[in-house]
Length: 202
Image (cartoon, rainbow, N blue to C red; front, side, top):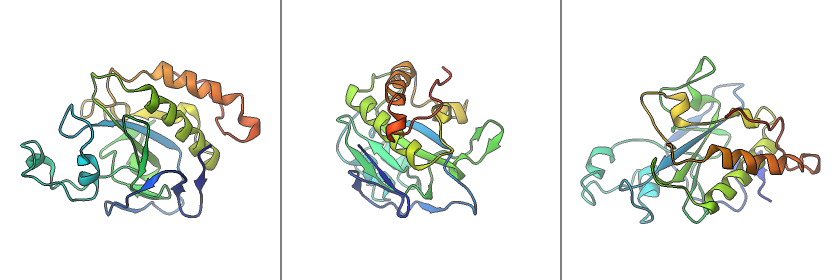
């Protein structure tokens, strides 16, 4: 079972690749939102290490025509889950990753201040893998155990907090499947696996 070290903000078992694209959360800010994203570089292609290169400011603009458009971006996420379900952590969970941009959740803006950003390697119109859903549910369980303000209702897509500007994780993302996985973990909450109030709205 995955665990979060509260002091360091690190997820055990995650591969650690520090990104410079982060800063401190505002004073008294707590983690109370999970934002699910989808990303592939180049678009529609998987592997190759390009997402990691983007998040660590090492993307070669000459390596692909699309990269010339984005190489100067300074962005990151806390976590990336690849197609095989492997987790890479770029930013400690107690710091602010630069993933959501202009955003609003339930009338509250600047979601980066209080959110964890999780990127799934994928595309809006291409199904995500079973390994990704299983690992995402496991990660969310660990987050809910570590951060009491999180509940299953506070798991959203990037498109939900930036409508009209973002579309990810897209129509291919099966929210019902994720919710079933989370509900299956809810029965173990008394044993400390940590999904509370887990009848999420769809």
